[in-house]
Amino acid sequence: MTQGDASSKIGFGRAGFLIDSWSTFVSQVKKQATEFVPMRFGSPENTASIESPGYSSWSGGDWKLNLQKQMDCWGDNRSWVDHAPDIKVTIPKGCLSFLNLTVDVGLPPDAVFDIVTDPENKRVFKNIKEVISRKVVVDEGLRQLVEVEQAAIWRFLWFTGILSVHVLVDQNRQDYTMKFKQLKSGFMEKFEGSWKMEPLFVDQDLCDPLKPKSLTEYEVCTRGKGRVGTRLRLEQLIQPAFVPPPPVSWYLRGITTKTTEMLINDLVDETGRLRATWNRGTSVQSNDYEELVGTETSDIKERWRMRRSKRRNNFSK
Image 1 (spheres, one colour):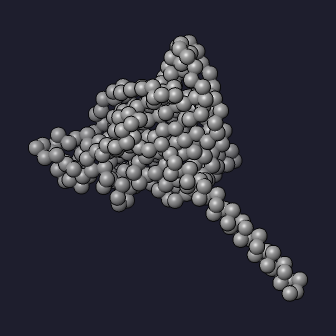
Image 2 (cartoon, helix red, strand yellow):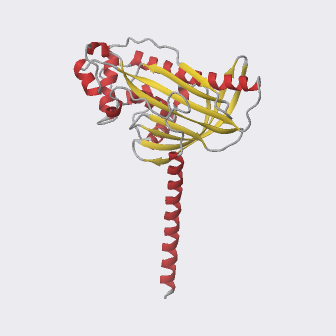
Image 3 (cartoon, one colour):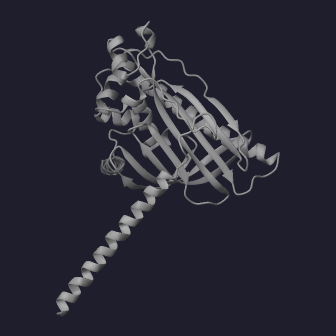
């Protein structure tokens, strides 16, 4: 064997090692994603998911086309009354709290999904003090795994403080879910949960006596004027390394519940702002939509590229 042949084999060996290492890394990340807390609704013991009318067929087709139609419907009819979220807190054995929250939101699931997954949603959620790092680990188009580390502000009664959170987020536009799980254990042994955004047929009374079971049926019986909102379900499990006795545990439980409520209230306020400013004819693929919602693409890496380009342009002016 010549020296060139030996070097060539060594080169191929190194390349193969790198490819194998990357494949192993991606497999491990995907394995972590499958170990997320299941989509449970009702209580930690109840693992059956709740489907809303037309939910299974909602994600089919061109999501931007569906979003365009729905935003235009909201532009024509902005009437909507926001209500306080329904929050239930239980205390599973060994945990600080299991929070189950439900709230109806006056915008379609795609718009809500855009808000909660926007890399710059710090402008919406006031309790996010700083996004320390954000990294897209796996990108499969409509689904991404994102590693996020951020500093969050908490407030309870007259107390306030900052909490560091480092999570892996599995966000999937196909079924409008976002699951999160803590990566590094510290004071919190477990911090995990899920968001689920289900379509809500706001104007289904126009279909009486029929009850639409799909988006297509809903559009037909409302003659294309029926608005679609979102029923948002959030579940969150918090398990510290050591559950302190009362009254400290009561205090901590109050902090986590209040912080989550603040997060949802900020989201509801943002949807109200969008309803008030949306005009028929605005394209969801235009810069106007990017300015309103904070994004114009489902590709997170593309969002970051656009943000960096925009900052450079603003700086050069």
